[in-house]
Image 1 (cartoon, rainbow, N blue to C red):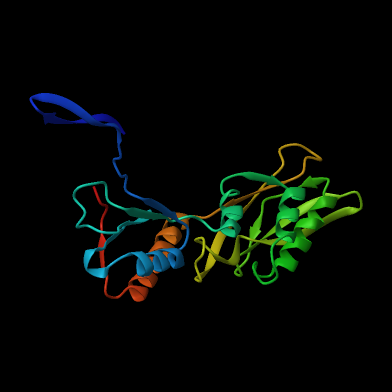
Image 2 (cartoon, one colour):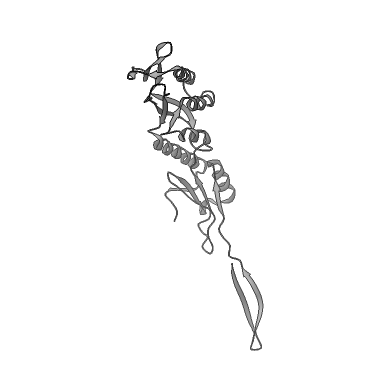
Length: 235
């Protein structure tokens, strides 16, 4: 705010009649977390003829009244945010996990999230008795590979999938569940009695986020059919 004075001339003399702060209104800014929040805000606060909604792969931005010229406009923004559940997976991509950490992670998954999780857990846990990983991995026609190892009682093997499938909502507040495939890599120990480690990678990570964002934009268009919704970013 700026200090200001208003002066009036009375009988050829300048008289100060007001002194104080001049209020300069700022545009309201709303930060939103879900598509539902956008719809509720727009339908309750905006006039469809004066509202412009922009979207891109990372966010949805709203000018709530584009006729405003004498002050900053009211705006709102929804930045596409990963769901807490999917972010747990994303935080593991490209990192190495020991057996214990990997088993604990899989055990915490909700029922029905990971396809064939019991079989995967059983085989990973069987590797705990390994004293040495021996030989090269052998792949079969069912997208599995056999891991051969030594134990104190002899030799054995387990089958692990080359990829893990799980079902999850990708973006916060979405109702779209995606079937997601992640590659499972077993990192062979370099020394005897060293335990194997595991790595998860998602080659389609960027594509999945893009598809999830497109789905949310389609939901927005269906919920606000009369509003102007444009691809782009406001300046």
